[in-house]
Length: 344
Image (cartoon, rainbow, N blue to C red; front, side, top):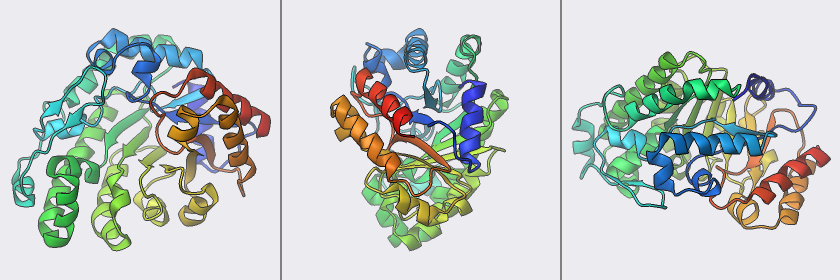
C-alpha cells in the first residue's frame, strides 16, 4: 500500500467525506491467482509467483486500494495449522483445515501454540520478509497485521456445529478454548507488528460471528474481539464478516473496530444506523452475482445505485459485500471504477 493510499483510507476511517471515491477490495487467493494466470497451489508455493500476482494487480488497477495489500496467506489454514489442524491442498481449489478436536474438553485442554514456530505462521513472516525489499521498491509498504478471528478458528478446529453447540452446552469450557485462541491471536498480531514496523492497521476476518445471537455475541465474541483489536496500536481496525453482520454492528465501536466489511444483503444505511458514525463502512455491491458474474453494465448500475442511495458519504469506502470474488473479470473491476468516478 502506498503512502497516498494509506492516507486516504485513514481519512475516510476518521469520518471524512472524500472529494473523490475511495475504491478498496479485500483481495486474497480465491481471486488473485486465477486472475493472474496461475493455479492456487502455484500461488501458495511459489514466492515469485505470489509476488508477481500482487504486482500485476496493483499495476493493472492503480485506482484500487487492495486490502490488506500483499497478503501472505494460505487460505483458512494459517491459524488452524498452528493448533495442529491437518491442511488439505488441491491444485486449483481453496485449501481446507480439517477438524482437529473431537470434543470441547479436548480443545480447551490443548496446549497454546507459538506463532513464532508453529504451523504456517512462520511462513507468513518469512514470505513478507523476503518480499519486503521488492514491495518497497514499488512504493508500497506492509501496513496490516492480519488474522482470522477467534470464533472462525474455533469452528475449524472443533467443527462449526459442534462449537456453536458447545457455547450452549459447555459455556465455561468454551470460554477457556476461546481464551486460548485469542491469546494466540494477540501474540500473532504483535509478532507481525514487531517484525514490520510499518504496520499501522489490523485486518481480522470472522464470519462465524454472524451465526451468533445477540446474547451469545456479547458473551463469547465481543471480549475476544476487544482483545484482538487492542493487541497493537492501529489507526485502521478493519473487521470482515460477510455472514450475518447485523448482530455485531451495534457493538463494533465497543470492540475497537473502526471499519467494517459486511454482506451485500445488508443495506449501507441500515448498517450505518446500527454501527454509528464511528465506524467506516467498506462495501457493498453483490460480489458473486454482480461483480463476478454480471456484465460490466450490471456492475455500473449496481455502483450507481449504491452511491445514490447513501444517506451520507462520510466514512464510506466503495467495495463489494465481502472479499473480491473468484472469477471477477478485469472489465468488471474497470466498470466499477468508472461508475464510481462518474457518480460520486
